[in-house]
Image (cartoon, rainbow, N blue to C red):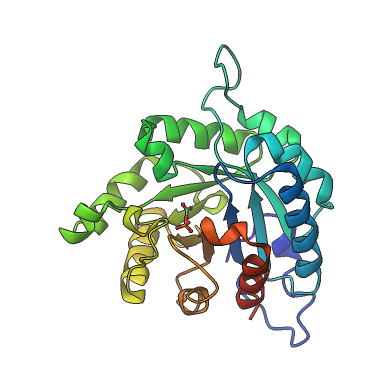
Length: 261
Ligand code: PGA
């Protein structure tokens, strides 16, 4: 079981049965969407919704970098609602115009950072850069959420396991209990398509074979309130990375309730 962080330490306390539930993570990746007003509304509503739920759900809000400070103002300390950035740079500081270092992300008050999203890999981010980002993120005290996943061609050619192994190998040297992995098939992102549940289980098992069982593995790609319950029933799945459906406060609230069951 994932043990790092305040959230997990509160895990059993609020459960009337005393039963320990595994932590479920819901990561809201807003990509390049939203406004200061929407960020305030989202943080306020989610904060209220999560306060009513058992401690076994951690929601990580990842708005665009320009709104991280705004979001932080709305989030109380140690709540189940955490803040995350959508990337950080692999270098600690220097002449990197437009970039944000891991220490800066931490300074704003974020606890998580999404790394290696397929949209950034498509824009040229390499495995070496992503590994560098993960190393600096860990050094700054952030939890990296590393995204991996196969293309449609690789999926159709039955090469998912091979691709995952290659993408994960660089991270095998890092402390596996301090990472989250998001399995996001590229063909499932923003398309309304999802793999069969057996395929999600197989991919998650493959990831744990490379990194060990201490790393929580999330699923991402067209997650919504209709399919989340079925996905979270899979014992290998520790949560979801949600793009489009996380922009709607109502649907995000519905998903936190599903994850809390
Ligand atoms: P989606 O995006 O939920 O809109 O498919 C997921 C992601 O890109 O992380």
